[in-house]
Length: 245
Image (cartoon, rainbow, N blue to C red; front, side, top):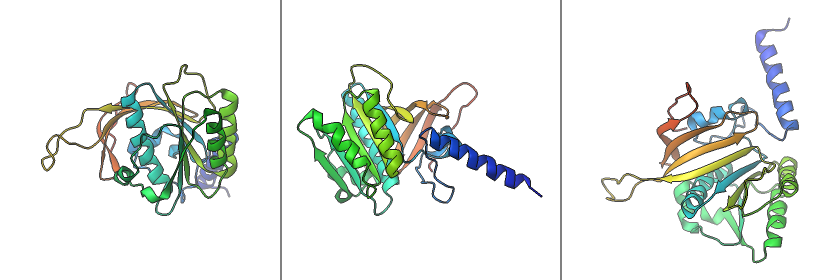
């Protein structure tokens, strides 16, 4: 006789299969990564951070670009765990590798590729996404078309590598084949007693689009390799605190 638990498990499997067909890969419960994102996790399909898929980040000024680099580094740290490898591809490197350790990323486990010709940029990102030995690929671009982004998303689906595509100062907000669209903005920090005038990074995290999920906006602080809530700005009736994961 079929029980309620059996039915729930069947429904969960069917939902995961449908999401997979839509390009959203949900890890099984025993493999779900801990992202330290707290209630932001509930915004994702089945409450699981999408892996093996493209995440798009939009920055329109230098402040957002720097904040986004920090946020992506934090996500890469969770994706890499202890022994993973991350590929970071761009034309103008603005990241100071030793500083990555602050976000839980061992600098020696990040491979930087500084591309000189723009036409080679997307090719290198795609080749990285096809490499199953990598845990994550961070690509910094300005413009990308829908067809090119579909190639990147397909590469993610085939290899199960998670892609973080950072679009810096794009001329248009054209749609791309990504499961999420993020925008990260810096917030003023609060000085610490032991370090006057220097505080932990604070960000306004906007999940502008999430396939089969729930967009929202949260104000958070990176503290002790986790995100902690300042306050949240979500849709009416959904006010939540973002606790450390």
